[in-house]
Length: 337
Length: 299
Image (cartoon, rainbow over all chains, first blue to last red; front, side):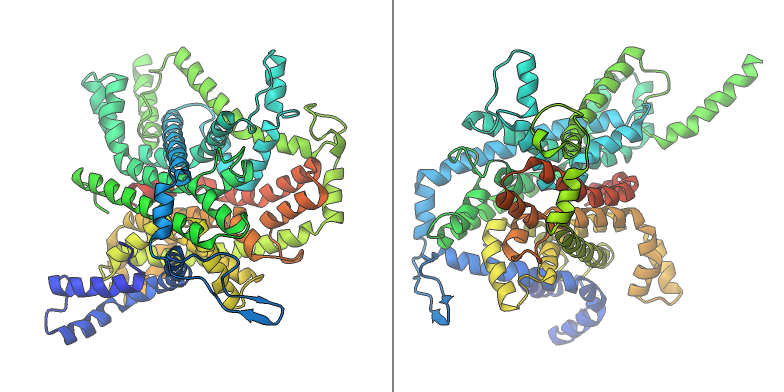
């Protein structure tokens, strides 16, 4: 587990930096610690609220979740109170059994397969559209700020409202999309009722929700590329494509890597879109890992906390592996954060 | 005459060109290309706006026509009056406003201090903190929700706005702190140094000198925190029970179950829910691009 709880990492890093002599303390360990405190207390005080909140609200639940994933806890055997009677917990430690079950069973792997497809298609389509629109908006074009305002709108509307709007449009019998298709003589499409169409529909909605963020971030990146570079390239006779490839793309690399990382993480864990649009259905066709884990602890009977935690921990491990690999690749390219 | 007037126009074009650094030089684009660009933008804008607009139109139709596709049929406000008179919508609205408002104010403040510390000071734990902020965003709701529920229960914070605010802070602050850090990185350090020379404490420097310069960053952070808190569903429906405690996300779901899926009132509620978000958005959108760019480019 590579997760540092903040307090641990503070202590550990403090030790590291003293050992490497990075902080100003150069003397004996005890004096160094004291000096380190007097040098850094401002910084620590400023990050303290965030650290405390994260430690309590994220750190503890995480530890607890990992523990539950090693037990057979479910609704029937956890500590609970019925009326005045307190029933103590009777669940048992089962080691890695849950993980073995999840990784050898077909349910986890097939859900993972769809989750990966969902993440890759959402992020790549969102990025491509965001990049296109950002490039257009970065040109001198009449009504630029008006277009920008309209294009950012999906971001400003609360997610559950937009998802509601889409369900309304997708409605098989009365939805506007099918009415339009019928006008063109095309049969009604079962947007949310057919497994394949449902997959397409949820991706479409998520792309719709995600493009504004991508576009705004990339637009910011584009505006930070000095115009002189383009002028010089034009002087040298570079074509539009060459300018895009050799100036725009490298200029955007740092913002792109950040937004792709964030957007991958967010999409992988995108709970509301799936939950509110299809609840994972039809069948389990659009169930991604997060919604399935939620289902285990809230919707099946008896509520299976152990299974849910196991899936949750696996999600976390997968994402951390991804972030670590991603970061290593970036580091090779000379980006450091 | 022509020889004297030409240079000024060129010069006049130059500064505005600088304001939009990468725009191609004026007049280079063919009319056809312009049309293509406008068409692309118009299509994209229509797709972006349409679902929202459709809900607005639906909310103005009598409930019985709600799922028809007639655009304007007996425009009426009855959905709104029913919603406000017959349901606790206003209570939910006030609850949401309180939760989102507190999350925004506290979130902006603590992500600004964190971002500033990470940007300006070199302190033990900095790298660990940056990593924690990133990793925190990977935590799936599903793992956290049950343990957080237990914590809130044991601290007596269930059904209290404070419980939701604290939870939302853990969602909003990591990203915001990252973005503020990037933004502070773009503010020259000389300004801090001048503050120290004038005898300000590090916090005084931050508060009096740097924060006022960071307005675009703050606008983005505030926007993000507000939207996060305003639109969150999972925690809100798990933590808050009882009609008078619900926030909008939970309230709306209850409303669907209780009265059957009545599209008309649902649409009206959606419109009213979108209004505060849109207001915050209007206020922040001027700064979104600059704020995000600084944050994300350097982030």
